[in-house]
Length: 66
Image: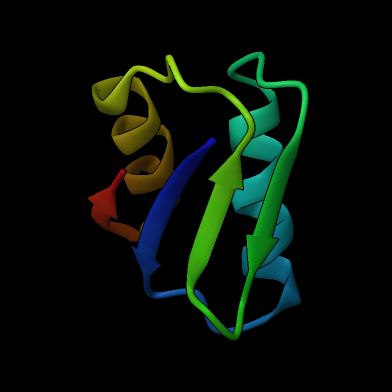
């Protein structure tokens, strides 16, 4: 499981955009939480740079990934 701290999400549209972007990278299970400003990917081998690029292309900032 990989947890991504995201800055800049403000609404459910933001949540859906992040979730779709991560699913489009091929991850099978993704959850995005607006209140906690994070996303969880059930994949321990997620490429950090690829994930960061996908999130930043949407206009959000990836603060942390672990």
